[in-house]
Length: 52
Image 1 (cartoon, rainbow, N blue to C red):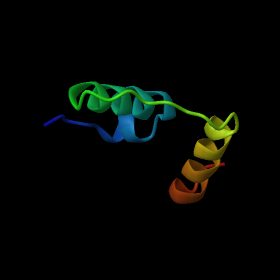
Image 2 (cartoon, rainbow, N blue to C red):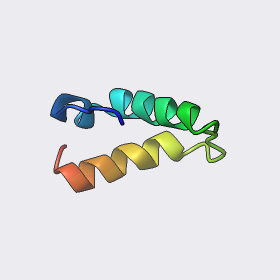
Image 3 (cartoon, one colour):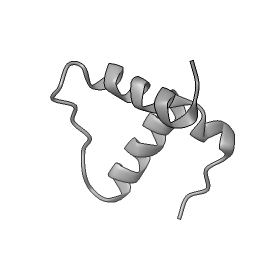
Image 4 (cartoon, rainbow, N blue to C red):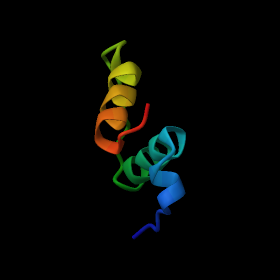
């Protein structure tokens, strides 16, 4: 179990770090094959969280 704060949820950098920690505990590696992955993630966050 990990604890995540609302500030971490609001931070793309922190969410990415959390994803890497979870993947590490699962014995997996995160791999981003799509060069537009970061851009798409930022767009999705903007849509879901209503941030400009």
